[in-house]
Amino acid sequence: MTREHLLEVPRQRALLLALEGRTADWEESLEEMERLAETAGVEVVGSLTQKRARPDPVRFVGKGKAEEIRPLAGELRADVLLVDGELRPNQQRHLEDDTHLGVLDRTALILDIFAQRARSKEGKLQVELAQLSYLLPRLTGRGTELSRLGGGIGTRGPGETKLEVDRRHVRRRILQLRKEVEQVSRRRGTERKQ
Image (cartoon, rainbow, N blue to C red):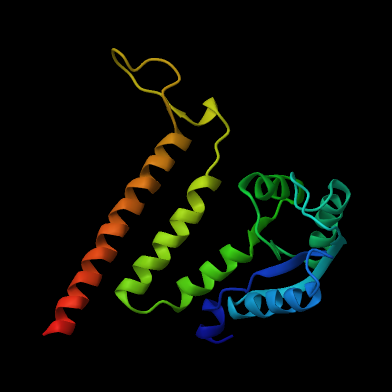
């Protein structure tokens, strides 16, 4: 085995999920999703569809279809589920719980492609800003087991949850990125004038 071969990271294997009938050209949309996955460096190993006019408010697909995904993913050795559509945070959470897979919707996949392709400082900052803005409503915790307990007067009790700390950190980073993007933009404008 060559040294390069030992350092190669295995490609993620993905299962695609789409709703038939959501749009008239759902097959074309699914093919585009497959091309997006390949662009992101993901190997598509299979796809599932369900006939529905509208996404299920809880799981995007029905409970029965969600239960079909886990054994199929195990059989195909898939580690991620790519959903051809826009997931709400609760839909993503339910699909992850049901399938035991990482779940990404179309937006997250496109943001990942942009992150891989960004070269300029401003581009990288804008992609990170978009990713964090997308992530913020999807941060979830499990309650008090993630609490940070403090010691001393006034800090006894359940304390600040890890979720609250994470959200505050993400919000702070978003503000910092917005300032940096603004500075880079101003600097570019000044250079253009000169």
